[in-house]
Image 1 (tube, one colour):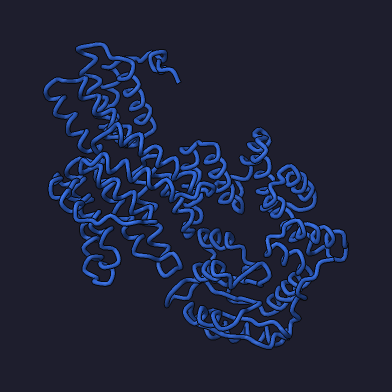
Image 2 (cartoon, helix red, strand yellow):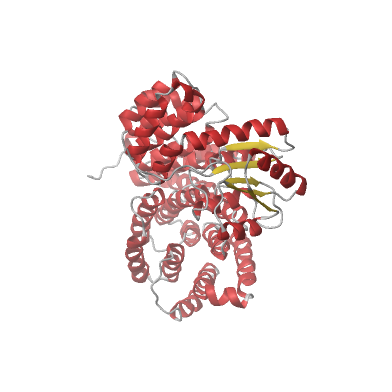
Length: 553
């Protein structure tokens, strides 16, 4: 019915084998030539492979994880997909002698057609290769239309092939293509019916994930919960279900639960840079300075030699050092600032990088000066930064913080408003960043100091027995650092002092109660636990009715 290019025959196909071991390259070449493939290119590293792809397309791609000299196979495959060298119609086989769980989860996410464990069994290789070649030949039409994003036609041809009993061994792949296309068309009720029907025949993890996804999209939460609980126990579906739940909670506006889910997914498949970026975005939104630092460190570590590699990733680590420092006491603060300064100096001594990153480096220097208490010098640095149109949200956010920390509230809020137009509203990260900008605008317009400065002011008020002012400062600091146990303990200390002298108002009780909730969940040592118990006993019980907000919404 529809005219499309015919699939290539085996003797028209070209193959590339990317592996640092000559014996692997040679043995696979021999198998491919015997199968009828006429053109086989051999590469020992990612650099050679990318050069080869720029010269000609390949129909079969065999890529090893360990390429040692430059990019690993995971990052190479990711780049090949991003650049369009690998499509649905390309046969991709991942090669590895490593079965470490984190690697396997990460590779599965790239959805290769097969995963071959080294050393190979030649008979098994021949059998698997024959099957993979058959898949691409038989499923050519639905795969072609899926690549063209013509999902209705992809479903049409999938159904036609599913009606042929002689293609039974290919039915699971056809069902997967159809399910993906139904989601692309937002046909969630049809997707649910489809995956339920498939489950009667096949128990693959992608079927369960597809069903869970379709249930969540239709808000069938009771059915979804039962399925999710089971999938979290399965090794092959645990990572995907955490990802799915993170997406679901972001769509529902529950960013704290979304953060919990994305952290679990990142632990299972740590090489996924996009997931670490989501974890970073959610950490910022949830004021988790430690989690923010961990995410940026992971991004810099796993992006090395990949398509994502950039000095910007190092800048983000440095920015996270400063954010963490601004939430800590002087001695801890200075330790993190020292690390930030050390890494920044390493970047600055590279003339090429310095020219490229000068504005970002100057902004970071201003933030370090503010954290060290030299705001006048920081203002001079910021005055010398020429205004420029920037599409770099991370630089914008850092400049917002620098202006706020230096006391330029108006400049800070103006930059926040300008940053809104840079966010892609319909993306996963876009939803988080829009909420983050909204939160930053609210907090920076009402709170004029960093958590470190607020804590220092509170300590001064406490020593003067001005307890209302002290707890007001700590309440603002705790709003900016709600996971800081040292801050929560300070709130308890001031609360005890207040309870001995005067009656706590409802806002103060809410602040103390939030500190209690955090400390209950925290892993305190024996000394901290004793201190916490003592403060709680002195403060006494807090009436739950006092915690209800009296403001009209």
